[in-house]
Image (cartoon, rainbow, N blue to C red):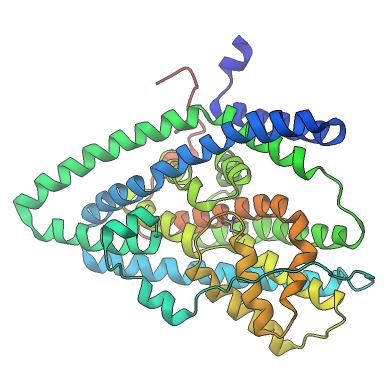
Amino acid sequence: MTAWKNLSLTSQILLAMLAGIALGVLLNIVGNDFIQQYIVNGIFNVIGKIFIAALKMLVVPLVFVSLLGGVTSLGDVKAMGRIGVKALSLYLLTTALAISIAIGLAVSLSPGSAAGLSSNMEFAGKSAPPLSQVLIDIVPNNPIAAMAEGNMLQIIVFALLFGTAITLAGERGKHVLNFFLDLNEVIMKMVLIIMKLAPIGVFCLITKTFAIQGLAIGGDLLGYFLTLIAALLVHASLSYTILLRVLTGLSPLIFLNKMRAVLVFAFSTASSNATIPVTLKTVEEKLGVKNSVASFTVPLGATINMDGTAIMQGVATVFIANVYGIDLGITDFLTVILTATLASIGTAGVPGVGLIMLALVLEQVGLPVEGIALIIGIDRLLDMLRTAVNVTGDAAVTTIIAKSESAFDKEVFKDPAAGVVQPASN
Ligand code: ASP
């Protein structure tokens, strides 16, 4: 027990994840109805859901308050515009790169081509919103409604305007600002409290998922599964590494090492949005990014940047085309890249949203949307993995922008002890 207490929080969370995988797989193999009903869908489900709700509870207040602090410390609308343009360009670039890698790999490995698979299941495709609507929806009719719905882009727009107005309002603005800066400290403490509960939450979430899902993936789906994982790994280990090295000169190994806890959070919640509090805390306290950049680019990234999801769409498109014996040409692939990149802007980072975007992509290239039924059975696990890649992209782009804006503390980045939470400390 003392040995457990002496571990850092990150190590505890990692161990909790591994224990959850082991127990979940075991329960999947030996579990009877009682275990499934009362333990898996009972205890583990309830505790896991409470943990996710607790994380989500902090997202809106944290993003709003932290972004106000960020905007006011920049104190200059031009800097904000510049960061916005850099973020948008890099997020779109990495997503387009991700999906190109995915299509390249999927075309060479050709999963599903030898398949005798047929889809007799139905998939009712919800459609992703058209781009024009996405643009109109960026500005909230009602900021309170935007917060109640957790609409991240609208919250960002309102916070940017509010923060700019605080700066323009001089002395009186400072009173308002001080209140929000204090509130930010308080909310960060709430994040810390929830993070300390993470080993239990992660353990329950992961156990439940693996108890239901198991590890058995049959036949041709294995080809899809492995191709997707290969593409995720290539992107996470090569694209970000090269971008970080070339654009910042920073060590990608330190970056990835410091991202461990964020990755486990993303993996177990399958939601970039729910992970925002942890991503924000990590990039600021462990990677050395100043709040002025992180408070803007992290929530923006959780909403518009989904590299892992784009990779899934690339591989899934090729897989479904192979299964149905439909040939895709270069124009189709370009359409897939464009549609998947743009669709990611309007869809929030929550579990399973990737499949909705996939429906849109398939429609664009004339592939049967019912093909999604083929892969839906193993999507949860893949969702967890791609969410981990999504948040890595958010943090990598945030670090790159912070470095270019001199809103970055290299000492913090290099210090292995920076931001490390000891579970017993406060
Ligand atoms: N779950 C992913 C995320 O939150 C989105 C998806 O691929 O479904 O980033």
